[in-house]
Length: 391
Ligand code: ADP
Ligand code: MG
Image 1 (cartoon, rainbow, N blue to C red):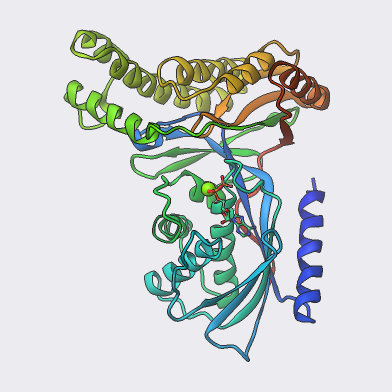
Image 2: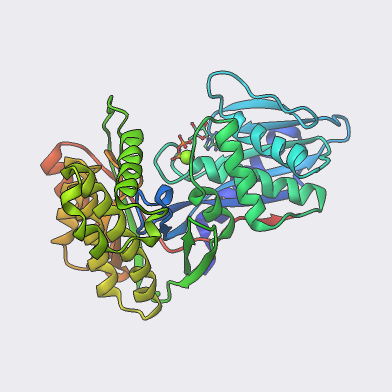
């Protein structure tokens, strides 16, 4: 089915390009954001994640500019700002400027992969919510890498492209992320989810074959600022537990082994490890259940994941719990859970497509009644990984 929303976005970007540079672009590329269906807070514990691309993209249109050999001029419609980026000696800007995501990828392609990029003019626009936990940053990076490939006519292996973009996020944006966001934007395929092994970076495409099921993403529109360095603390607790277990990796730990050693643990640390071990198992089971079209099982695993993040890992919050609770009582919802780092942000739910609009409306209405906060929601099927639209 054609993605009319993407087509409109492309038309918008092309029109903006013509307005800014008084000519038509030669090249147009798109790269999606992503949502993680299950496998939360285990990417840094050698676990699995199960993301899919969302049908929301960053689109970049560009044209080689022979007048301007060593510079890329990029206008972001979303930021309403133009940035000039050196293609020979890319320099990071201060104050977490948005162009750093692009500059970092240029740097990785030029210095890391030996690309020689001709000067170009470009316009970028995204319909991935920016800063909403659906990885607009990775979609901008991966769109940039895909654009550089199309401009130069050279490509690199998809996994390497993901790694270049991850490095850009680390070194130029200062975000020490795992591999999920960039790998998803590069590797995901429509009608599939990606089972990604964060230990060895291997992956499998898992069919999301039932066309009658759609993914509903609801943003709680809250983000609790926590002063306690919660993320670093969780990581430290996970490491401490692994040491007590005497294991190298959580992949070598069974639930039974953990339970047998329970008395050696501080209670909180035990619960953290309990989440990790059970979430790894749930993520693998979810992929297996999807392969068999066992959607009820998938739904149960999503609810169990949420409960584990709430009770064992303690990274949920009242608003996310309210959303999942309402979803679980709504007819036509197969499963739901918080997604992302937690303490706010989005939930992801699997719902019956023919009822999706009314399900979305009723969950949002009830959430607003209970919390006084107006949420935002959208539906998606698995989108398509980064691709060239025109070159
Ligand atoms: P998320 O990836 O969850 O959307 P991040 O905070 O990781 O949130 O990334 C958001 C940042 O990425 C923005 O503040 C901006 O710097 C950059 N960014 C994302 N999309 C665009 C865009 N279309 N144009 C310019 N900058 C963008
Ligand atoms: Mg991001």
